[in-house]
Length: 284
Image 1: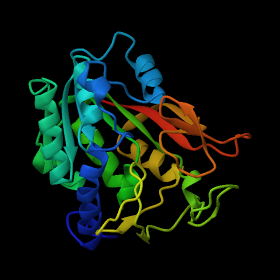
Image 2: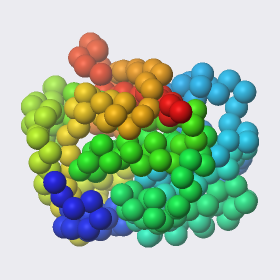
Image 3: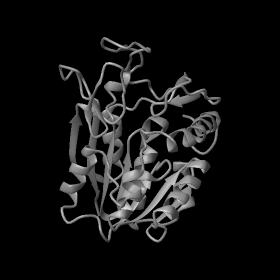
């Protein structure tokens, strides 16, 4: 297993995400005009499921947002009355998050910590202090060890506190469309890689067109559903719900069609789920 606190995988991934920050801040994909107008929105999947988990809203909750990128969703949660801590390993992302918090007047309810997620307990020594851990879209695929990820989540949650997690479905991540503009994607990656990383060299970004990136090599990991759910159960969480969705909040494949509200779907048949989400509660 890769060292969780240092190593080539971590430095390459961090360099890649550092470079993405200004691209994303400037992109239409991450349009922050609703947030700036006081009406920040999550994607419809999270909006619906968080409303079911918290029918009375988020006001008064203490939330930890792991792998928060430049803080757009962190600030959307804070805008609804929660006190939120966002954590990310990218210094430029955290710098931008703090600037955005100041711009929208949420510095009193949103703070940001720069740290590798595996160093989160040292960077934010607040065991058992959060009502909700929130982590969504493009998270665990960058992490070599989901068992430790799950233990970190459990460590931060209060007894009875909840996890909300949404990400790409691991069954969908076995495919690639190899740059094709029509037709179905093809098999490209193993569903179970026995802990080995896929080392990918790609000069592209899901949120920006015509990029010319310098840090193009990333290390990414496949995590079967059984691995992820098993890790959460082993860490002392109770699974409350698990959902599969046929929409995804980025153009995962060229053949997908826009649904509206930032989501994409298969053009005709529901070939396989593109995303998944779950809620879990810390027991005891």
